[in-house]
Image (cartoon, rainbow, N blue to C red; front, top):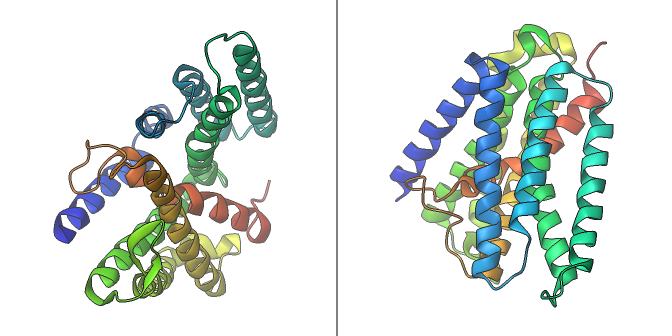
Length: 283
């Protein structure tokens, strides 16, 4: 099981990184928007299987528009990108409330609105920090921090899973995820730190001129490791409350698209915020 999961994870992320690095921006945007849309579909499917109400059509429409808009504004490095996101989310909130006011057959309107918005915020909005990172600096430097993000996050996932399987004895949060252990958590952090330092050494000639140094690699190794674990536990909480084992079955050894990107949904915003605060682009 571990070998199958490892091979599938490496292969899939190698494909995604190749798309982001080598294909034109439009092709990369379409591919990543497709992943976000599939993951969002899986999210709503899990809710419905768990007896939760949501407005799938509204959520998917808002999610697709948000994903596409974030990519377009990121490519353009447009100054009004945040305005677009705010206006779209506000429009979605208003539209959902108006929809529920006119729906005579749904006794759980607030639940429907909350679940629909959660899906859009949780998946396309958080996943949208990847194009923000990719195009933050522009020019030939643009993809390297996406590579760094994926390497640290996925090695944290693999390290936590492998360490937990080999040495796990003490349950971490059994009510949410009975298989996750403190030994796996520590192992994931250690592997994330090693991956961060190694990736920095590889990228050093390209990232040091931006103000990204060895100390940043150490700090982010810990931060991204922590957020990767939180992202994994967040999806475990969703699975537990909806009584679903995997978000989908399209990816052998992994599950669904949401299972593939769950930890990145939490690490990408942290990396973006760190870069803005401590290695801001020179405009």
